[in-house]
Image (tube, rainbow, N blue to C red; front, top):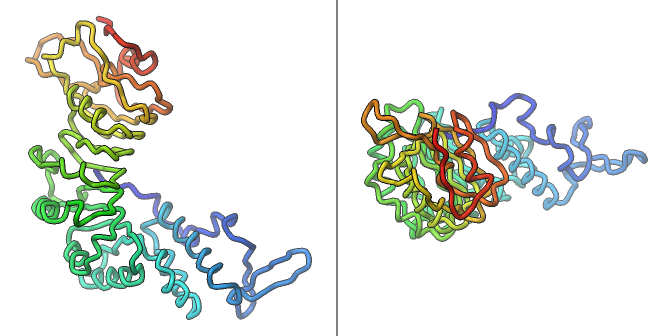
Length: 352
């Protein structure tokens, strides 16, 4: 699954305050020789911006940094911008650890320059929990700095399956990442990786259920989504799942609220007596949002070519009583959505 960022930066969005002036406690205008702040527009009284309390300036910087993280993470980092304005702002920025907790290394630069950049951000973030978008080449630096125990969000993107496997075997454990809340494993679009083999079917994902704080998970080509009791959001790309897999997922993630499946394929087990009455799989009561992109009409049949078999999508087998948002891309038989609209104790799929 590829990482999805906001649209590319524009000159206007390098300064998030220009888009969201309402977050400022007071209007800011440029004055000759300095930046001044108008406290009372009617009376015309002003005060030099650098005379504001450091706590107020730090809070303004924090708001700008948060907007940069959510809207333009691939643009010039907002902490870097404010730290380069003047010596006073640089001192405030470098002594505000919260500004430096979202680490997205400049991968377009040379390897050594990336490591220096990471070292500076790690030092400035001090002991704060961090969010990291990680290229597999810089994992060693994270280990050397012993910063992994502060990781809150970890996104890994690489085309080197051997390096990913080695890293996951050595580091992916609650002892190494005790504060991990969000984990993404993505392939690099430039890498020579075969999408079909990105996640190996025999990999033991059961370790993820031991992470006490893991809430959001994104995987590329997972054969069967892992069951994580604390999970609230799951995003998969290009995976297969069958009736039993959905049953295990729903029972193992009782707090799941958001489910997103790109390039989704439902494997319909012919041993399942779907032609007769069956009990639909109850979704967690917390599940309220589903977005699915289906391929092959949402179903793959385990059958010989030429065999005529009734076709039902995933939605023919599940009941979601608290659904609030549903988005479907692909071909879908409308009757298969009745389980969503009218969940009941028994259902009989209609025949064509």
